[in-house]
Length: 72
Image (cartoon, rainbow, N blue to C red; front, side, top):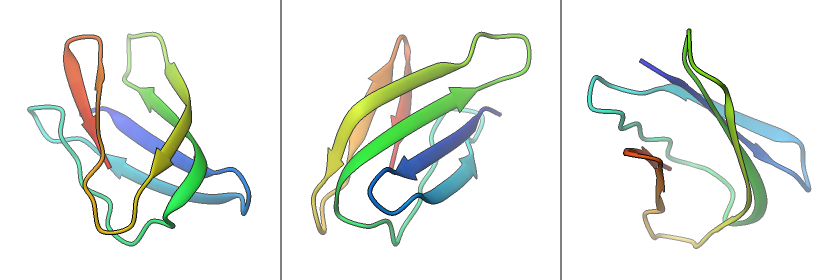
């Protein structure tokens, strides 16, 4: 299971979760808009930081990182 932390840059609010065995996670109640920074980490692997992320109200956001998906 990877650790996923999403930071809403304007407010500094952090949202965290662990992925399931397939690499998916869900985090409801996040602020719409952005800017978000997403940090994905797993023991033994390099941490991956993704930026320039914006989410829309009422819509699922899916981002692929390499061969794995990260879902907000």
